[in-house]
Amino acid sequence: MKPKHFTIDYTIYPFNLLVSVCESDNCVRKILKDKLPDDLHSEIDVVFEPSVARTVMFQGGATIIRFSKEPSQGIIAHEALHAVDFLMSNIGNLTVNESWNYLLEYIINQINKNINN
Image 1 (cartoon, rainbow, N blue to C red):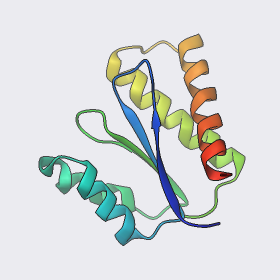
Image 2 (cartoon, rainbow, N blue to C red):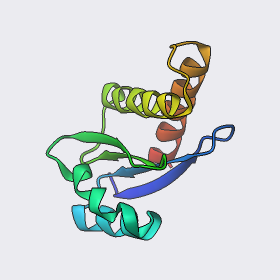
Image 3 (cartoon, rainbow, N blue to C red):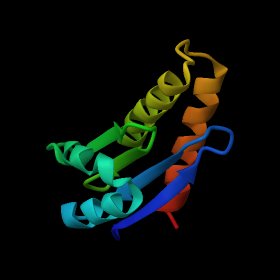
Protein backbone atom coordinates (compact mmCIF):
# COMPACT_ATOMS: atom_id res chain seq x y z
CA MET A 1 0.00 0.00 0.00
CA LYS A 2 1.28 3.44 -0.94
CA PRO A 3 1.68 5.79 2.04
CA LYS A 4 -0.92 8.55 2.15
CA HIS A 5 -2.89 10.85 4.36
CA PHE A 6 -6.25 12.54 3.98
CA THR A 7 -8.75 14.57 5.95
CA ILE A 8 -12.31 13.51 6.69
CA ASP A 9 -14.68 16.43 7.14
CA TYR A 10 -17.15 15.64 9.92
CA THR A 11 -19.62 17.91 8.04
CA ILE A 12 -22.09 18.69 10.85
CA TYR A 13 -19.50 18.73 13.65
CA PRO A 14 -16.92 21.50 14.09
CA PHE A 15 -13.87 19.26 13.62
CA ASN A 16 -12.05 17.25 10.98
CA LEU A 17 -10.28 13.91 11.23
CA LEU A 18 -6.79 13.44 9.81
CA VAL A 19 -6.01 9.87 8.72
CA SER A 20 -2.46 8.68 7.99
CA VAL A 21 -1.84 5.31 6.37
CA CYS A 22 1.60 3.65 6.16
CA GLU A 23 3.48 6.95 6.48
CA SER A 24 6.83 7.25 8.25
CA ASP A 25 7.12 8.83 11.69
CA ASN A 26 8.98 11.79 10.18
CA CYS A 27 6.26 12.36 7.59
CA VAL A 28 3.45 12.22 10.18
CA ARG A 29 5.39 14.49 12.54
CA LYS A 30 5.81 17.09 9.76
CA ILE A 31 2.12 16.94 8.82
CA LEU A 32 1.06 17.42 12.44
CA LYS A 33 3.47 20.29 12.99
CA ASP A 34 2.05 21.97 9.87
CA LYS A 35 -1.58 21.42 10.90
CA LEU A 36 -1.53 21.89 14.68
CA PRO A 37 -1.03 25.19 16.50
CA ASP A 38 2.45 25.63 17.98
CA ASP A 39 1.18 25.21 21.56
CA LEU A 40 0.12 21.61 20.75
CA HIS A 41 3.45 20.48 19.27
CA SER A 42 4.53 19.10 22.64
CA GLU A 43 1.63 16.61 22.47
CA ILE A 44 2.62 15.09 19.11
CA ASP A 45 4.83 12.30 20.50
CA VAL A 46 1.82 10.39 21.85
CA VAL A 47 0.95 9.51 18.22
CA PHE A 48 4.16 7.49 17.96
CA GLU A 49 3.68 5.10 20.86
CA PRO A 50 4.28 1.57 19.52
CA SER A 51 1.15 0.11 17.95
CA VAL A 52 -0.30 -0.95 14.61
CA ALA A 53 -2.80 1.91 14.83
CA ARG A 54 -3.47 4.81 17.14
CA THR A 55 -6.19 7.44 17.49
CA VAL A 56 -5.41 10.66 19.33
CA MET A 57 -7.51 13.74 20.01
CA PHE A 58 -5.48 16.82 20.82
CA GLN A 59 -6.65 19.73 22.96
CA GLY A 60 -9.06 21.76 20.88
CA GLY A 61 -10.53 18.72 19.12
CA ALA A 62 -8.01 18.02 16.34
CA THR A 63 -7.95 14.23 15.87
CA ILE A 64 -5.70 11.83 13.98
CA ILE A 65 -5.99 8.15 13.20
CA ARG A 66 -2.59 6.77 12.32
CA PHE A 67 -2.29 3.33 10.73
CA SER A 68 1.41 2.44 10.75
CA LYS A 69 0.70 -0.59 8.55
CA GLU A 70 -2.04 -1.48 6.08
CA PRO A 71 -5.13 -1.82 8.28
CA SER A 72 -7.62 -4.65 8.32
CA GLN A 73 -11.34 -3.84 8.42
CA GLY A 74 -11.34 -4.72 12.10
CA ILE A 75 -8.55 -2.25 12.87
CA ILE A 76 -10.32 0.45 10.84
CA ALA A 77 -13.54 -0.11 12.80
CA HIS A 78 -11.66 -0.19 16.11
CA GLU A 79 -9.88 3.13 15.50
CA ALA A 80 -12.98 4.74 13.97
CA LEU A 81 -14.89 3.97 17.16
CA HIS A 82 -12.18 5.73 19.18
CA ALA A 83 -12.57 8.78 16.92
CA VAL A 84 -16.35 8.75 17.40
CA ASP A 85 -15.97 8.40 21.18
CA PHE A 86 -13.47 11.30 21.34
CA LEU A 87 -15.65 13.59 19.23
CA MET A 88 -18.92 12.79 20.98
CA SER A 89 -17.32 13.13 24.42
CA ASN A 90 -15.85 16.48 23.36
CA ILE A 91 -19.26 17.85 22.35
CA GLY A 92 -21.02 16.39 25.39
CA ASN A 93 -22.93 13.54 23.70
CA LEU A 94 -22.03 10.81 26.19
CA THR A 95 -24.92 8.45 25.46
CA VAL A 96 -24.30 5.97 22.67
CA ASN A 97 -27.16 6.48 20.21
CA GLU A 98 -27.89 6.70 16.49
CA SER A 99 -25.66 9.77 16.06
CA TRP A 100 -22.69 7.65 17.20
CA ASN A 101 -23.67 4.85 14.81
CA TYR A 102 -24.11 7.12 11.79
CA LEU A 103 -20.79 8.84 12.44
CA LEU A 104 -19.03 5.49 12.87
CA GLU A 105 -20.42 4.27 9.55
CA TYR A 106 -19.44 7.54 7.86
CA ILE A 107 -15.84 7.43 9.13
CA ILE A 108 -15.37 3.76 8.15
CA ASN A 109 -16.78 4.43 4.67
CA GLN A 110 -14.59 7.49 4.19
CA ILE A 111 -11.45 5.66 5.30
CA ASN A 112 -12.17 2.76 2.93
CA LYS A 113 -12.96 5.11 0.05
CA ASN A 114 -9.73 7.07 0.51
CA ILE A 115 -7.53 4.03 1.09
CA ASN A 116 -8.86 2.36 -2.07
CA ASN A 117 -8.40 5.43 -4.32
